[in-house]
Image (cartoon, rainbow, N blue to C red; front, side, top):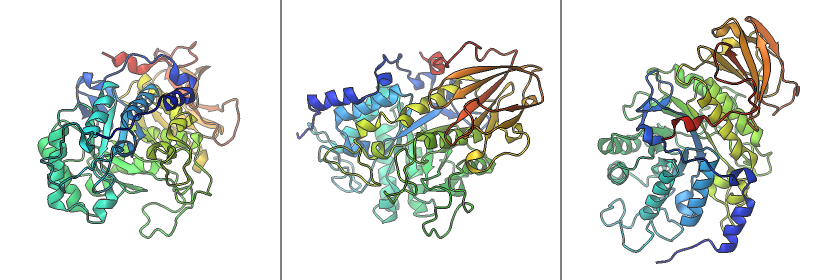
Length: 488
């Protein structure tokens, strides 16, 4: 058996390069499926557990995890994800046909016949995948399994009959694991090899009735375009992609309006307007430290404030969660393992980049306030809203509202959109989770601007709550861990 272990020096490096915040004693591991399996909630917007506990999806793109990390590295990576609040790790189960893991073992030893796939005493491809799934489960993490990436299917490496055999193999192997979410597709349009995707999805669903399923589409497209009525599709996913305003690169059938490339909130609105309405999420937005437009490494790189903007725009527009990505982490760059898109930083150093840690503040905020009655509502913003980076995005429940402002521009907000004659208001800082009480207000339109003034990336959230409610305390400077109230 050929194995690769992290040498003690590298383990020390991993420890030393991890941020001080991540080294704090982690809270008791939250095991979400202790609340029952995941379901689509009754109003059709969100996910929940069988006992009614809300599930806010905070995803991390660990695409090449099965191929590029050994067991020690995989355990370390999953632990850091848990400590930063992530609960779904998105992986490419197969990147190619066949794929090979770090132990030199292939995913297929007899084509799509998996009868003799298990070999005793060897870290086989699927044995290693089992280890990743079960290690994630111990940490309370779901694995979002992209069954096979779209490009090999597009090139003809899996036909309909092979898709059926592969789907049956996957479902029978993992149907009893508690932490699986199925992804059909993989960076491909749904009208390319549609029969193969349908065969893969239905063969899995024929065996596995317990796990949710979606379709991961090509950039700037949404699964709702092709599969919204498919009985196997539980929720929609879109990929807003990596382009900045005005980047086209000669696209033919362009799926969105000119010069709206960064407006991922548009995909949310369109998906939620499709009937029947299904929950929706941005499964692949821009990545931290990846070039604008992806392919030219001489372009500017997307930064932490950009990934925050995509996250809050999408969630406040109605997404049930969000997925973060980092250029180095998603392809697990390390010495001796090169990467694409100009990535040079080792993945374990990239864990210290600010955006990787900042996403947890979004998740904690959304779980703090009443969850299932929240809807997007742009009528909260009185007067003229801004465009592009100046666009504020608003959401509300019955007795609270929130407005995300990326640039700190002055806003006019209609406090009468929620219950109560008096309202308490706070500023919430997205980069560090700091909470600041502003004061008590009456009804009507209020003019507000954060004291830090106007500048791109100076993003804050205005939180307004009916003063008869005690969701937040005036003396809080940060939010308590909202997830722990569901811990068992």
